[in-house]
Length: 370
Ligand code: SAH
Image (cartoon, rainbow, N blue to C red; front, side, top):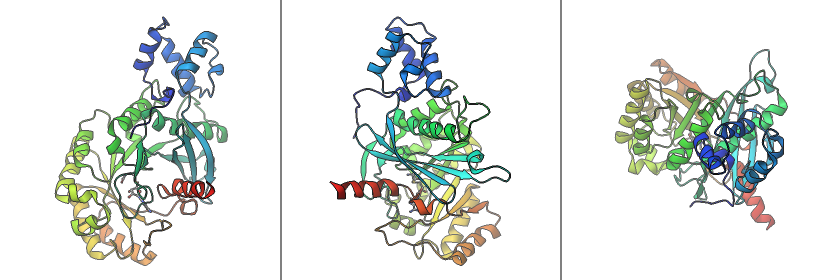
């Protein structure tokens, strides 16, 4: 399930790996940093822009690396605050990267705070019953370079829309690893990509502004707890009892709540920060007030934040979001116990922002056209 491109992406190189390759050519040690500066700080889109490199070196780079392994297919802008980039990889695979703008008083949307949602796999093997990403199973893992490329594509786009005071910095404020795929099932590439994003020679982006979301792979959560970089963690809970969770998330069979909850506790104790429990509200599936009470107890026990997300309908799936009244009643049970809770106002519903939907639609259209 691995794809080996003709040329490895430059976005997958670390300062150390690039230095090593250039040393073999007889290039001085500072050359790798110069090249990565062109890529991440000056956002060069072609080798020829890298004017302080010799022509023969640029020719070698072009023959050796793919500068950008993801091509923008299209950008779909919603009427609210969400932008979605559909990217095509070298093997024709499609992935989605979402820009979520947080409206702020006194500034235009382009200048407002931005959270970027990135994908880590093409498709997904977790088979959550409600999710569009997993409908066709897992196609393949993304490489670290393909994961980093999504963020650079966002920088390209945002740089054009709103010049920044410090152009060498990333063009967004937060990263959530909540796009297509299960990041902890593609652990090495995901963590490798985030190390590049975090590095001073890369995007220089703070680990504390990066949230990893998982469906609950317990051994990997425990491994993540040992990582030196302090990423934030979000857990896709979606059921507050095994009975309910198991119905919609097959992962619960291998890692039921009795295993998952202690792993979350270990993570939050190691990092001393609140974990987020995500809970999609789906009508008649997990929106009972009994579920609300069970969720409240878990959140209090873990001292976790709860993010309630009204379900985004997926074409071909029967699930619906509960009424606004039901959503509020559910949230009130948590609020009454002083649980830190947000009831998310939908963003991007009109552009199929729920994970995997845009890709699914485009692949269906392509299949129809073939
Ligand atoms: N595999 C990881 C990250 C990708 S899914 C995980 O499970 O956390 C990102 C989030 O979107 C998850 O919480 C997922 O359950 C949620 N999601 C999937 N389909 C959705 C839908 N139709 N409406 C709302 N949220 C959805």
